[in-house]
Structures are given as C-alpha cells and as structure tokens.
Amino acid sequence: MSVSKWFFWVPIFFFIVLITACTPTKIGEQINKRITDPFDETKNLNVHFVTTRREMGAKDSCEGNSFGFITDINPHYGICIVNVPAKHIIGDISSDNNQDKHSFFQFKGRVNTDEKEFLSKIKTSGSEEVLVFVHGFNVNFDEAVLRAGQIKYDLKFPGEVVVYSWPAGADAGLLGQVMVKSTYDLNFTEAKINREPFANFLKEISSTGKKIQLVVHSMGHQVVLPSIASLAKSGKSKFISELILNAPDFDKNEFELLLSDLTKSSERITLYCSPGDNALIASQKVNGAPRAGMCFKYSGVDVINVNEVDDPVLGVGGLGHGYYSSRPILTDIYQVLLGVSVDKRLFIRKSGPKNGENFVLRK
Image (cartoon, rainbow, N blue to C red; front, side, top):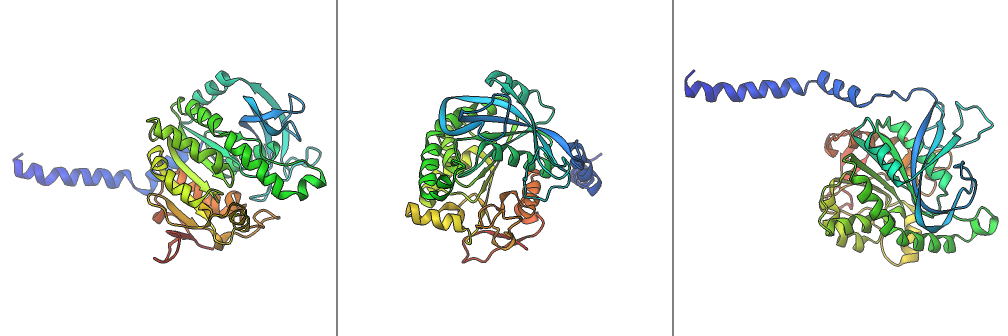
C-alpha cells in the first residue's frame, strides 16, 4: 500500500473503531457490567463506618445513642448491617425494627473492626470504586448510617459505601432540640476539630487504590474541604475521582481560597446549590458571610442550581437544605458517577450569564 493510501485509510479505520466502541449497545453493556446488583428487592446492606464520636451505648448496636456528640481521640471502625426496604420513598429513611421490613429501614447488627481490617475490606472489594459519605449539621450516628444505606441502594452503587460520622447532633430532649443556636455552635466546633482526623482517614482510604467518590452535605464541608486542601498542599493530587458538594455551609470567600487545592485533588467537582436554602440563609446571618452553597460561580466547578426541584418529601428538604438524598439529585449523581459531562446529563439546562450558577436542574 502506498504512503498516500496509508494516510487516507488509517484515520478512517480509527474512526470506525471509535464509532463501534460508542454504540448504544456498548454503552449499555458497560453500565450492565458496572452494576452487578439490581437493588430491586428489600436487602441487607453493609454500611462501613469510621467515626470519631465517643462510644456511648452497646458495642453491638448502631441504633440510638451508640455514639455521641463529642470527639474521641481514637476513631472507631466497623460495619452496620442495614435492612433497606424496597418500598421506601426516595429521600425517606423511616426506621422501625418492629414493622414490615419491606416498608421500614431496620438495623440488623454491627461488626466492629479496626483500621487494618477496615482498609483490607475496602481494598479487597470487587469494585474499583468506593463511595464516602460525610453528613452535615445535627445528624445523629444512626441517621447518618441509614442515609448512607439509602444512597447506596438508590444509586445502585456497586462498590462499598463508607460513612464518615463526625460528632454532629443534639440531645434528644426538648431543651436540646429548642436550643438550635447552641447546637449549631457546638457542631461547628466539632467539625473543625475533625479536620485532621478526616485528612488522616482520606490518606488511608486513598492508599487502597480505589476510585474515591466523595459525597458531602451541609456543615460536613467544614470537616472535608480544609482536609482535602491540606493533603493537596502536601503534594497529593487527583486522589478523589468525583467530589460532590451538596449545600455547602462554608464561607464563600474561604471556599475560593481553597479552590485551587480542591481542583488539584479531584478529577471533577460538582456543587449543588440553592438560593432558596433557608438553612444557609440562617447560617449566613450567624456567621456574617455568604455560604458557598447559595449559588456562585467558581472556576473549575460545575455549579448546579437545584431550587426548582427541591420539593419536600415527607418533611425532607423542608428548609430547602435536605435535597441531596432526593430523587432528582440522586438521578443526576448517578450520571455523575458514570462520568457523563454536565451538559450531556438529563434535565440539565444552561443558566443565564448573569446568574450565580452555571446550570439549572429542571423540574
């Protein structure tokens, strides 16, 4: 074959290979291969936990006040076995061990491990991915575990899920529930105390070689974002695959100062925001500064306004702040984890040039 014909046919050949590789059949096969469990029946799931909460109750239970609201020096590791009901409404995590298991979340036990066992279980998992969930303000340990189980089930996530539970929450008594400001201040202090422990945890879990999908909500960003930045400053790069930020209760100006380190650390950053988030509006008044989750554009971040789809489900999202576990957001996160570009995802439209966000999630 002459050189001229070689130059003519080789690009055509590679084009045909590329088209063949990207046919709908091939894409479907890749998704089917990735998702090994259909998650279409009630099932017990292992939710790995790492918590810096002080242990308070029974050592074989994940229920109630098994872990409290004050930081322990040494992290606790283990697995909570959670029954996830097939009939649960997306976003609702109502639990009752005495009711129908197909309609209510239930705790089925706890297995305590140590750091070495924890890392070994993550490393030997059959999936190349691990999802790490960090909860926000005023969330008890048992609620955080149930939420992690719900997210894994509803995302049909093929890998292990880990909840990092820092000491958020409040006493169950009436006084503790009423004194929201004091609870906020206490949780905020505990969040800052947990930055170094979380950085150590992140360093540990990234050593397993898994693709880390990190999902954060609300005040959990006070724990996570400075920790990521500190690791990036130490020379660690691209150790997070997808960094997914939901309603970050984090100072906007401080977020911008950390942004270069955050983009160094992550393959992609997605930020879900809402100007109608009453919890962040209250936080702005308390802290005297706009919050990162109130919809501002940031270089290198896909900022998505979810205000249109933030409909409360059984009280979830009533403040415009709990949308991260709802059907619309999980549908988009599902596509994020598949690696789909933001402008190619379902129900996304481009926002106006004068708006704070880049995109809007349509109702």
